[in-house]
Length: 308
Ligand code: GLU
Image 1 (cartoon, rainbow, N blue to C red):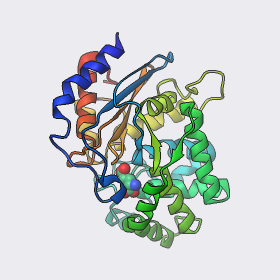
Image 2: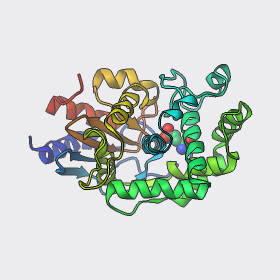
Image 3: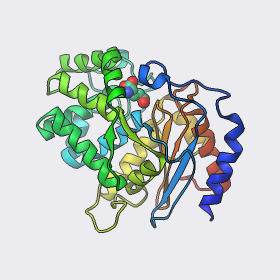
């Protein structure tokens, strides 16, 4: 299959729709000014081949796509004990909901809703001994997996910290149930910074590469990122919980484990074959990238690659 041609075709097909529909996330002020008329796509195969088209080299705020990588780090560090604090069920509620958390005594439904990712950040802070240590661990993982230096966007992190009232509430709420061990300040600082990681599609497709090769590091010769069982579990969580309240539709229409973020990025996995990263900042009503999802649908239609 000529993946380069396929990706270029997808970008050309969607080009006329750029900027026509959807809206960029505006509840984080620093994201509100991103130009919506951008679309990038990149792919990394389990044999190490790469292809990319459109704005694939433009860095963006990965936002909740980061939850996939912090989950990976926490699985490495904490193992199965992680699941004492966090569930594995789709939430069926908005990603930042407080109501469900109250009903379930401060145990988040899954690691991809905000409460779950904040609980994961708490584990990382405990393991690293400080918020600064946890942030350094996150950047070290992203840099190792993408093979290029990766950093936080300080402006986005500050913007989230200044306006993240609901996330601050979620962290305090879990703390009141005894479900957060550390002070909430370093936990939230870790969470806001992980959301503010800046990467482009090429880097993201490569960084997620361990998910299509049973946990093996995208660059051969290094120790595995996760074991086979952990890798299967991350993919399962992406399929069932990775795309907000659209996970059912995404499984139905695309049929790949995906993790999306409100920056407009989506990572998708074809197990044993390849990983894809798409980015287009305008979101649909479910908070997923409008053209990103269309690009994935086109990719699956053209290649017939799907887990089903
Ligand atoms: N930083 C965003 C928040 O906490 C992430 C949201 C997302 O991408 O789902 O609200």
